[in-house]
Image (tube, rainbow, N blue to C red; front, side, top):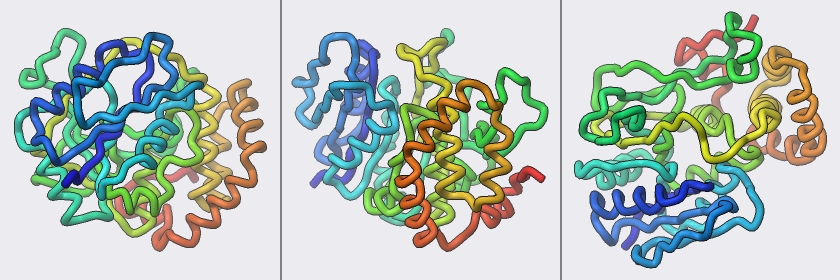
Length: 312
């Protein structure tokens, strides 16, 4: 019986999705998993996954963005657990899948991530990577940021340093290696509402924690992630700004949301994002009400737990 669905969106990645899937088949036991690949309207010809018996592929007619594509994949999953990855990753032969499933069976209300091994920049062997990343801390506001980086320095995850222990709590998942029970992902409303790309890790992490769950890293699972100089697609900054405002307005108290939105530069990207927000007002209000009903901890509890500084 299959226990976990691997959700893999991609866009204009050529053969990388094939290579990633082959790495999964080479390192994980057959029968435990299926793979849901979501082609987000790539400009190249559709990839042929017929060599892999457990792969289902969906192809968007128009670009939806990585987060909507991930959500589509989760909605199509029919296993108790899901594992969300990017399409340019490499896996070790170290029982990583069995370990992830064991973690989810033991703590189904925890969002799990693994160690991220940086590949690329001259290092492509997953066993030789010297750069390891262990989830993330959360930066709410960086008052010293450059003006041209302001939109990226509000509500941003920052790589965390390794701590002692096989597994431990972290403020935020990061690294494109996220495991959830499908029931919990649905309970916190997943990635619904986000546009294109950006802020998905803080959104999932803070919702998980405020709904009574946890975010943890498992330090004995290391997954290679190809870091690229340039992505094979472009995401408008307005969408990045929109996602931050959307997050503020749906899961934060009004006073804190207003302060954080106030730090975003009021440029053309902000104005475009605000138009999207105005158009989504009904959805935002419904989401806000839903989160108020399922949250049993506040964002202030979260910040106190992890020593996160809030804007004054």
